Length: 318
Image (cartoon, rainbow, N blue to C red; front, side):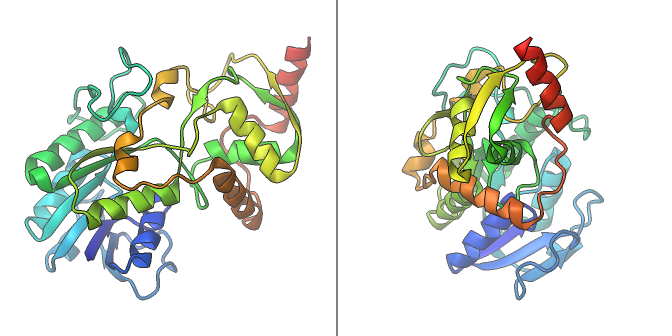
């Protein structure tokens, strides 16, 4: 299988490239060449820039499928499709659960859940526009490629090389043990998809030439936020006491805390039936902890600082 990946050297894209190469695919990468230039020696690289609309490197060649990991606004997707035309067999677009409506959705919602209205008049990605821009991207891929279009909607992705802090924060905090400040209900459900499971789903969908939309959610067994923290501690060999603390003055997205619980209870049935594996949460947590230690545990941008956590714990005790 000849596979073109738009992106492919950061986190999710990196996992997809690794899985594609493991499956024997002939991979070509398209990107700016600035992230991970040392990765994947021997893999063909085409240099371009989606922000400036430079797709000249895609002017020649053909592929059995393209995986669009880096399309966030309709212009990105439209220009890529214009550049590729019919020189690709299948277009797989990596979307997001942010496409879905926020109200009237119960636990176990599937891929036919109503989506938000598409947005095409901005490229400023905020909490209000990110999902609707992804909706517009999905619509454009489906309009252009029809049965040759595949949409994958990941939940929260976790694994080694994660460029976000939300899962890493709890892995690192649980590894320290002791009293852990949690500004949320420990019973809140959490869905984490291992990046390698997501990658295996993407490659399997391409191998099977399968159309449609698929939720990439996990872990193998349903868990709660409190259960996730305890699992991370168990993996690290520590003990934790989870203390519910005041949730005032939190940023909009504190690590893994979500007031809308049903958004963390989506159905994975369709993706499982299509071949998505189920990595146990313990394995994901252990691998992330080992990777974080190996990279030197750099400062995180999200979550409480030590001082902030001590203050919250003190308030909770008082």
